[in-house]
Image (cartoon, rainbow, N blue to C red; front, side):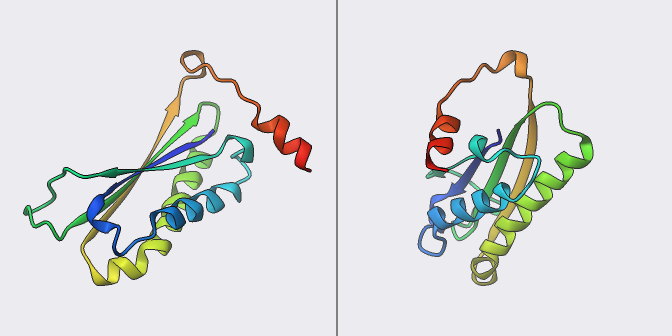
Length: 129
């Protein structure tokens, strides 16, 4: 873990390279010691239907949800969400200078007993090293 989901308003696509945003967030997350690289997943979901603030369609949003397995201290969780948020804010700064964008982030902890998982990513990373 973590799983990082970026929900964004579709009207941002002319001004924001969403794939590059995903990579910027992934890169930032991979630099955090508390997050194992094989577990990092970043995905973006375009939202076509939304209403923001005064209803003016010029407004856009980026909302980042970080789901993290339990077991990290409050301080580590705070550092994780701050670093991920700051990487997104830095990436979006030029777009935020020219248009109305709301940026938010939230970290939620996952109860390991209620979230089974399996995969072979680690096996394939080891083969490449």
